[in-house]
Length: 304
Image 1 (cartoon, rainbow, N blue to C red):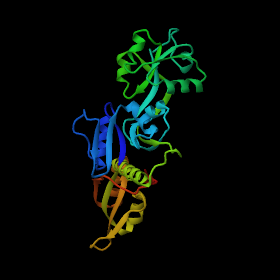
Image 2 (cartoon, helix red, strand yellow):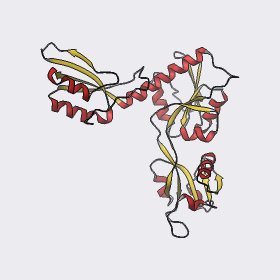
Image 3 (tube, rainbow, N blue to C red):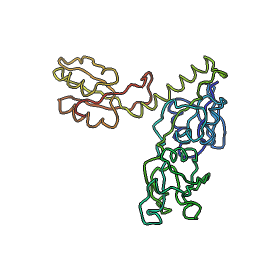
Image 4 (tube, rainbow, N blue to C red):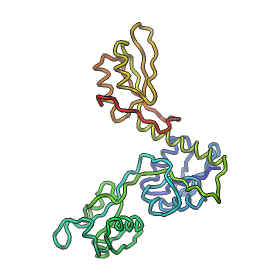
């Protein structure tokens, strides 16, 4: 039985559960449940604090987990990334009042000798060390933004999504991002003393393949169109697909039906360019999931 950890709360929890459903896995119906068995698919899910997931996976008690890349790095556990899942994007940044006590805009050098409040002391220390800055790190478990207002810290280091919470407390982000994060599927680093069985390896491959299929399905659309044969080669260059477009002859002489995957973010431009060629009946449809994409990507055509 494959054992998988999912976030039990926070911004990653609901998107992670939605992805599991799209991948064909059952999910809990009561948010108070801490585990859920999907016997049909041979997976048991455990709903844990996002900060603890890397620790459980790294210990070998769970085979896979979904958590933020920043939380994975902060944990220091012996885990590695399997695939990035395309949701929960955020940046980890320093923030402080708009100006220093000397009326200057903040830079990382202004943090020398200052007090920095954060929930991610490991990441902050490593970043400061790379920049040869010494500062006092104050570890907090939450509500980091209020620490400057209360006089506990001079600046903070925290996850920033929209920046709304920072603005509410009179703080502005500065300097480059300490780290960038998104939801990530993680597994334990290989350990000779605790080898995985062939059954677990296969189960992990199936689970990963399903999630990869959902990730790709969210990025692409299926495009169908009727194409005059005299512009078919030009149309194929516009819609190269992952491997090659599917081309079938129509019953009307001189025409072919073409099917190809296109990136969702350029689909409308592709349709415009095809229409300009004289292509007819251009349709797009959603892709719910896919398999065997093996990390392939559709290459942009020359006019994109």
